[in-house]
Length: 168
Image (cartoon, rainbow, N blue to C red; front, side, top):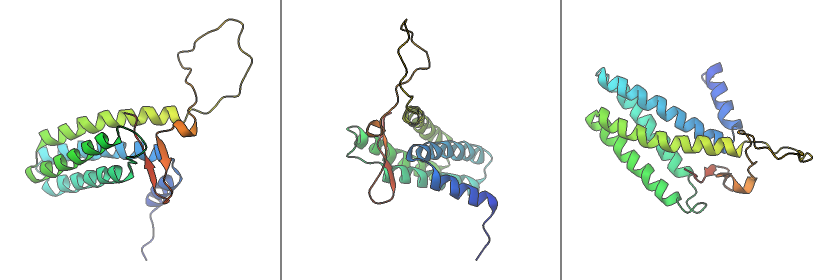
């Protein structure tokens, strides 16, 4: 049995203890890193490295597709079709070593990732204790209503696997 490096152990622990929302955000962060690296590798004619990064990105999008609860949100089937399109796009980009196709996938995934980051931030806002209302009503630029667990786009499925619906 090979010893586990501290970095790998830390990464595994971070995934095991992360909320479903955080896991999705982490996946989109990693997708951006993989696709940016793939562009650099393609431009540098590093065929093996670009292949590794694009395959890893495809695996992440497959996982996002698998985790998507298509019954939890009316637009989930549309998001699923975008994921399928991105997987196909990344496959073609890998075969052709096409920076343009990687760039298209990055744009699509960046927009979706931004939506998930925003939803995760909203879902993680803690409920504040009720306090007496101020004499003069004021509105804070930072006031955000706390999301109830039922309103969260992220859920844990009964199978032990984490799933999510999307608000993007």
